[in-house]
Image 1 (cartoon, rainbow, N blue to C red):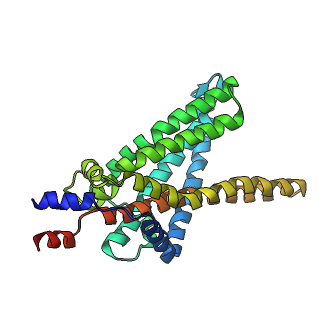
Image 2: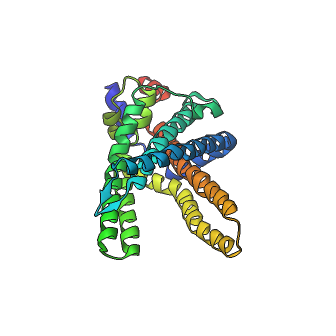
Image 3: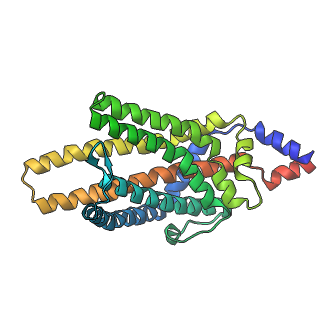
Amino acid sequence: MVAETLSESQRLLPLPIWRTCTDAYRHLWQYRWTFFWHLFTWAILMWIARIPAQLLTVVAGFAGLAVTISGRDITDYAIDLTVSILCLLTGGGLMFLSCGRAIMFGRMPRIGDAVRPFRMGSFWRYLMLYWLIVNLVPTVAVQGLRTYFAFEGIGTWWLNYYGFLAAYWAWAVAAAPTIVLALPIAAFEPHARPMRDGWTRLRGNRLRLAALGVAVALPIVAAELIFEYGTDLLFDPLSAANWSLFGQYVLNQVLTGLLRGMLSFLLILVMGTSVLFAYGHLSPRFEHVARVFD
């Protein structure tokens, strides 16, 4: 009876989209310098990790292990994508746990949390499962089709690029809300069944959680678009002004290697923080149990 009452009360609880969005951004702003160093640390680590990846590309070419599609070598792209994914998963997961521990345990996040190897329940297993379903499936499909279409000359660039980008995000927006609540459940509820419990708690709130994800991501996605197009606008005048190649290289590495990486991790951090606050709204607490017994 108690379990049924709790389940019913949670099912009828609507997720407040605007309040959860503002709570997430308020929390990140409150500890902005700590999270800045989290982002900076992992952007640096990802940038450094690409150096041996580039060497591996050269070695693979000499060893005849190059990956080709339609006769074209994509080894560099494949290795760089693998390194980026590993860094985003590890860094994003650690920042999620750092932020979650701060919210759930009522303490300040620590700069060292960015590289501290947390082992919390079955979180890492469910993070891999989440990535496989939400990210890997559409990424492989979209990138594979984009590469094939580009090599075969099918369609136009803008249609291939924006069409596939829209397809990727449509899949992510539809799939993520159905399983993302399993991540905080796996981290903070050791005796729970994350996938099943997350699905149950989201009844009536799946569209709200999807809308929340879109709302919190929009400012960061807009910043990424401005960055991508602004970078080209910045480098064209520098090239015309006969800047030294070394100066252009250094500036390009700072912009593409660090700022782009920080924006990628920031998107993960913002969306992860919103999920943690949504988890707080949709999960039973001790005061709910007290009300049932009263």
